[in-house]
Image (cartoon, rainbow, N blue to C red; front, side, top):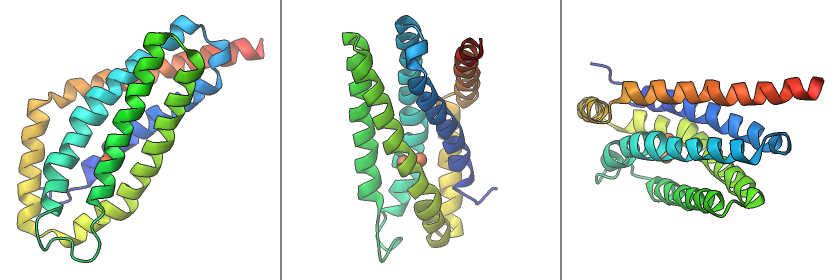
Length: 188
Ligand SMILES: [Fe+2]
Ligand SMILES: [Fe+2]
């Protein structure tokens, strides 16, 4: 069984980072995109954060990896889990800001909340990829890593992850399409 317990989380981060980059592009080009389109795509981004980031990726982290890392004696010197959980919560607050801006139909608030979410999550992912995950690989025993893998597999099954991946890889293409359309308009 695969004993690297961060590889698939890093792969999930890659899809998240791609969507965050596209969100920034969307906001930068918002003046050329109709309000209706912007609200619609932002609604899809909300779904992505709820279903893929929070309910899938953060579930794997909070309920499986972080839970193991919080066991006594695993991380002896410095335990960044509290900070990571705090950042997940802050992300949920930004998400509420995005939802409320969509409901109130306020483009400026929407742009601010979207960028706030991107800023938060990008730096969060950087810390996990470069500090927390290497720490987990170095400090967990082979036995605990196997238990984590088993728990990951169960979660993958219960969340129907293949459907989630396909859905949000399609969203990447959809947003790329919107941005490409705007770029063509700019060249004309
Ligand atoms: Fe995280
Ligand atoms: Fe993460």
